[in-house]
Amino acid sequence: MKKSLIHFLLVAFHFSFSANDSTLTFSDKGFEGIFEQAANEEKNVMLYFHFDGCGGCVKMEKTAFLDPNVKQYYEKNFVLHEVNTQKGAGIQTNQIYNVQTHPTFLFLNSQGEVIHKVVGVFTPSDFQQEAQKAILQKRTYPQLKSQYESGNREVEFLYDYCYAMENAFENKAEYIQEYFKVLPSDSLSSPRNIRFIYQFMLHSVNITTPFDSPAFQYMLNHPEDFEVYFEKDQIATRLVRVLYATAYEAVEAKDEARLDEVMELMRPYDTGQDYIFKEMDGRATGLLRVPNMEWGLKMMYHEKMGEVEKYKAAEKIYTEKIWDNAKGLDEVAWRRAKQTNDMEKLEIARSWSERSIELQPTSSHVHTLAFILFKMKDLESAKTQAERALMLAEEEGKDSSKIKILLGKIAKEDRP
Image 1: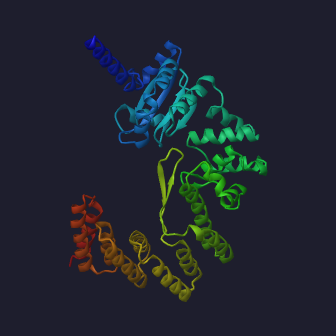
Image 2: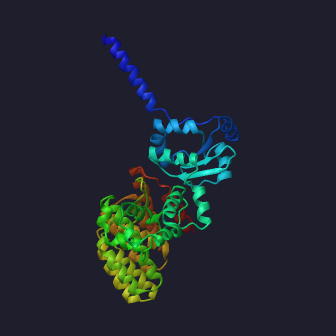
Image 3: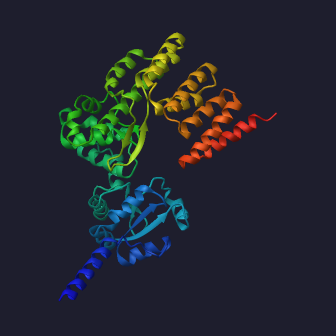
């Protein structure tokens, strides 16, 4: 009796493990054969575009692809074919579709016509819903695109179209702004529009909901409504990204009044922290690192205006503000060294870099100092610091290729 029970449990465990480990089954017919197979089996085709080392692809393979409902639905309705865009026959296949973002899923009929497209990481249920759209030919990306081009600007349609465009990784600010134009202003506070504003504030870190738009102003003035659904730091990241871009535009336009207006709103967020932008699925896809936004922008403005003394005064305050921020000091020192050959400005960059090393003597920080010294034509000191950076990189187990390139440039300049 005990042996029978143990045998049953082992069989059940094996069955459970096998079921959970079962992934989507891709056709071995090759690209040319999948459409004939689809016609014979009266199915559509799904092409999975990926490459080795793609983080989003791995996440899909470990989640949605292993879901038994997804597996059953996809294999029942589609001939599945994977396209490694960087290897073998997949390179040639991708020349037809020119997929640049991974993972991409193209749904086609048996004649090879694209009937739907989605890009990115999806939950199992959402991934199955996208397949259902392709099967039903309802609210698919090509269908919605055709309606848009025919002039449909109804609010519900534009809402669906923005999400279809987002899933196809082809969204643009104009579509999002068109939705807000036709949306009644008193609808901004609804849960679905709070999500919409949050999700579409940025697209691939490009701003799609500008500072002057009602949607941005609503998030700026009512962050508590968004905190019900989203993390505070990600709400702040979206706000800061738009505020900083708007302030930078004011600098470029030499509009001091606009700059002061935006900096006043930015001040509560000007803490010296890094703002890491995360997509809806949690992937980090952008970074805004500005050690002190206010005085950094003031420096830019005075330089743009040719106000030398005001620039120097702002630079002095800026240095005081970031003096204990090792990463920030290194960041601005490196950026300045890349942008200028002015010896006075490089000397300030050198002081920033030396302070960052005093706080955190890492290979990256020492590499920055070596680069600044190289720009200042102090080749002997540059070589000493580059060799030190190389030694530290080896101790830290970090990539040293850029340090070696700098050492090569120093050696070339040092030749008699």
